[in-house]
Image 1 (tube, one colour):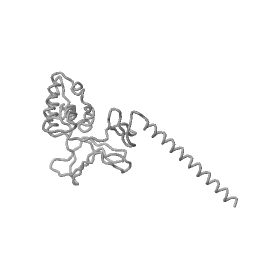
Image 2: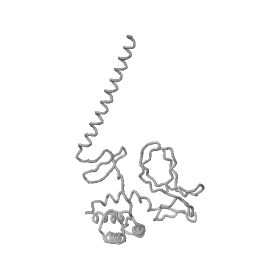
Image 3: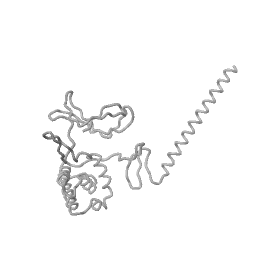
Image 4: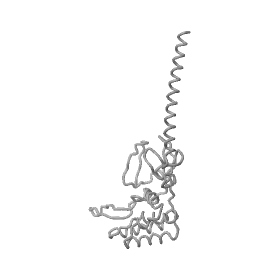
Length: 236
């Protein structure tokens, strides 16, 4: 009986220690959350916060980033901005197509219509005459937001690149992005950028799924290994 009683007391002591450790952990977490809530610079729920500058961001271990944005830029607007960018490449004032699109987006709250091309051309003429984008957007509260968002979508698609012709490398400037699916082959795709993913670990999907039939030729520039989930990622 004494041995059983001794073992019982030992088990009770271990349980008490575990409860105390759990209580201390909860108290520490509670203090941290309270400090975050009391911080005057941030207000929001546990997943997202809004700063005094009214920027909606996601708080994460990797840092702050835009959580969601709608990309409603029309083909006509992108084509107009692209032509202005490429056409001014070797001129004294080189126009940036993403900046022009962000300017148009900031003026209309991200809505593009038949007048968007006119707005882009007007901004281009002002920039060519010596005005700066900083001056043009001085009163636009959300220009930086649209610039960051559109850069995330279109960044790297236009720029310098080299092509080998007749055994020699020649430098060009223009569109560098292209479809990875070979011409003439059918494929399906899903607009699931930002969708929740749980395989391996919880994360947002930072890509756009494109699926073709078995045997479809894939045109890629390079292949990289995504070590986080031990899968192969193909970049264009």
